[in-house]
Length: 168
Image (tube, rainbow, N blue to C red; front, side, top):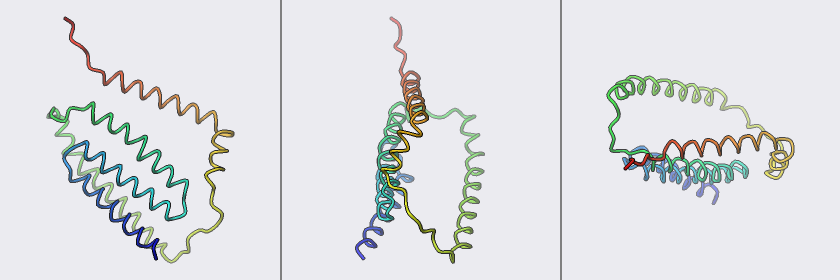
């Protein structure tokens, strides 16, 4: 019973934070609402007995990815209007992408409704310790390559975002 109450609280917080993120006009507030939404989703994963998914949701999405979002928000000047050709392109592509996403959402809902009578898959879960062990033994090389690529992207973002000082 208590888990149901916590689930509904987290669901309302997550949906409310997502709605507030969409409504808010301040990019900084948008990023903070997204952190709140990601954190509530991590709590929901924890309630579903998925500790690895909960930890990844909190650490990776609410932590690392949001730090990058904050960097982007700090580097972009929201007062600068978009060029007219970009606005015209957005007016055409926006509704088209919205229709594609609506179609995907409808297809996913149809699949869920069609398979609602099936029982959920059961079996042993994967413990976070097993994931860590495989990550640092079997997949150590791809893990290190990924970290170097992320570091290169971060350095590139800093270089591209650095403002040129006028020569005197």
